[in-house]
Image 1: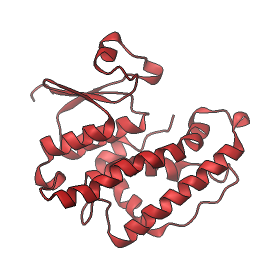
Image 2 (image 1 turned 60 degrees about the horizontal axis):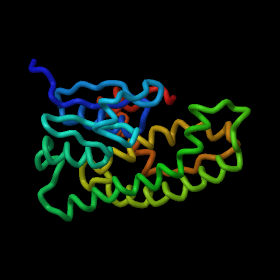
Image 3 (image 1 turned 60 degrees about the vertical axis):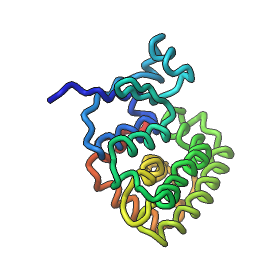
Length: 212
């Protein structure tokens, strides 16, 4: 097998790195991933190419690219063909919107995630957790409505538009809401979509790992 030219830089306990690694599996890319960021720190070489002190970044031939959703769009266009990068701009846009919508959802989920994964229980800020869980629920009600109308965020079939929120769905369903003293509302369409995503091999390998 030829040496991979597609390189993913980033630790796999990052939501944004998970997106890219999962999509690489979906595309069947020959790639290599290097841990960097967080507990692994950054090298001067990396920061010269990505001065944001964030992950992920990819290198693909002469291209260095950061920002996870921009990377997903590039991967779909460069390697996905019509299956992953529809020719019709309307089809692309309707799926694409959920990639940007995920960014607003991520802000709501950050405090509960950090409490669960990286903060001792005695230091939990319960009012902030409760506030942000309610913000998550409000966002997920929007997602529930969309998924009750179509089976996938990308439309009639699983596509790149499902990747970003697919990663965050794993965290949502992993949050110990009972330990926070909060109830998890029923979202049947979201739950069914999540069950189908969990069946995907790349998702199990790259996303469903311990949250740290």
